[in-house]
Amino acid sequence: MIRVLLITLFLFISIQARENPFFPSLGEKDIPYTSNKNQEIPKLKRATISLPPQARVIKKVTIEYENLDASLDTKTIELENSVDWHLPVFISQSYAQKQSLQENTQKKKVIEQKKAPEYKEVAKIEFAKFYVQDKSLKIVTNDKQLRNFLLVQPHRIVIDFHRDSSMKSYLKKIENSIFTKVRIGNHDGYYRVVIELDGYYRYKLKKLSNGCLITLR
Image 1 (cartoon, rainbow, N blue to C red):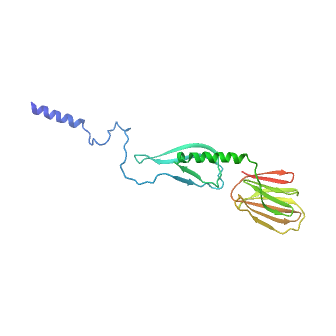
Image 2: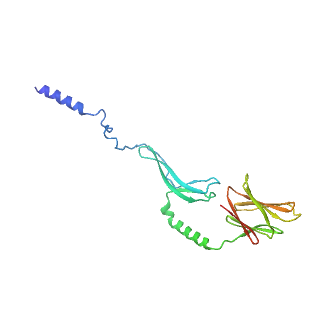
C-alpha cells in the first residue's frame, strides 16, 4: 500500500515540474531578463552631426538605443526648428553642468539681436560698393538694375547694372562670410556682378534708393 502511494506521488510531481526551472514558463512572457555581459562602453559626453548645405529645418530627431536585454529600440521627438547648416548639431548629456553657460549665451544673443545690424565693406569699384552683414549683402550704386537671377555649380547670384564703361574685370574674395567672392565683368551697355555663395540658398532682392539689398534664406 505504501509503495503504491509513493509511486503515485512521484508521478504527480513529475507531471507538474518544468523541464528547466531557470527560465520563465510559457505563461510568463512579460518577465524581463538582462545580460551580465561585461561591456566597456565609454559614457556619452558629446557627439556632433553635420548637416548638408541644403538643410534649413529640423523636422524630427530619432535615437536608437540598446536595452538591458540587448534588444534595440528607438525614441523620436518631433521638431519644427530652423537651423544654420554651418553649425553642427550636438548630442549631449551634460546639460545640467552647462545650463548656466547656455543661459548666459542666450542672454548675450538677445542683447546682440537688439543692436542695429552693422554692415562691413567687403569690395568696391569706382561706381559701386559692397557691404556684408550676416546673411545680407548691400550694393550701393546709382546705376539702374536690369536683371537678377541665380546660377548653380557653384551657387551664385547674378545682377546686371546699366552703364557704359571700359572697366577691367574685378575679383574680390571675402573672408569669413557666406558670400565668398564678388566678380564684376564689363559688357556692352552694362556690367555684371556675380556673387558666389558658400552653399545652397534662396535669396530675396529688395531695391533701394541707392542700390539693392540681397538677403539669403
